[in-house]
Image 1 (cartoon, rainbow, N blue to C red):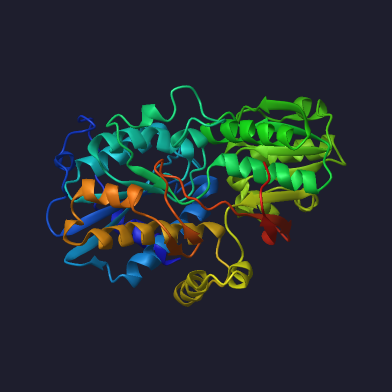
Image 2: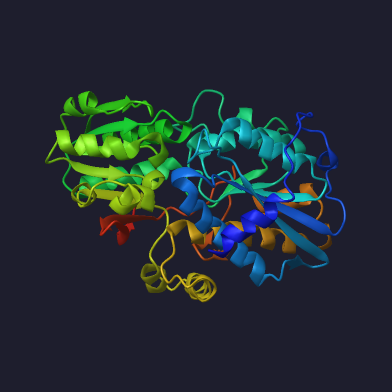
Length: 419
């Protein structure tokens, strides 16, 4: 893919960050310097999340290309950073993520930071960027506590992520109160009476597990357990053998050993129905040829993702989405891209349109943040029409339900979450 060449070129200009004060450097003054503005992207480019991250970057690059790499008098430079490491692939390594955020803070031309992919990574980067007043958009974070103290959040969330006392962060996917309700709704519609949950103990997995549990109970399902799993465990047979339920939710990400989790649960419970969230919505999990779950386990598994198929977008009359899929196929030769490609596109498009809306003030971070958080209303996008609320959350709520066929995610239907 062309994006791989991009990584190599960008790497030439990416020196390691020092340990200066997080608020120091050229970006602490409120305005980016010069007429070349830099947008940073920070995603895991190694391990199981690599393909999803490449899809996000392809989408981002397409949006930037369509804008001609310019907004008004400003030229836009794009810098891709890897927040994973060889020692911690497939997810955001905390030390590396902090380095990425500091790099953006210390760059006097920084105007936007797109990331992280993992909610646990944003817990690290957000306070650093917020202190410096740098606007941030995530293409994929769903952890509730990043924006609100609703059920699923941890004590002290979300205030601890905003040391500046103002909101600088937005996301274009619904938070996990919505995904938890979508999973519970699906299970109820599938006739589940009892459900057992495993969570990977990460910010994302543990929080979503609580949301699934709350929503399931609201819909009258009995929750027989919500167990944390250790990514370094050789297997989960003992935990799996203790499940006494009709249905199972694996609330985790592929990189936290959730292929093994699903294999062991399926083997110990031949009749149980299996459900996974967007954290496993990738070929590394679904495709046996990529080391994913076996085909017979995939046939029993349904996955929720907050995006729809090209056909469903067309059915709903979202012209922006139709144009995206056409342009993406023309640019990359892929008619049905990874679901995260459209998120990457909208993340960059929202950033660019925000800069365009403030005009000559596109280098003024405070003006950009105000436009992003307070004035993104009735936005017609590739994902549908939405607002960004005062917390930085999207008002979109639809989830797509996917089955697994031949190792690939196959769109089934739109979930209108209850509860």
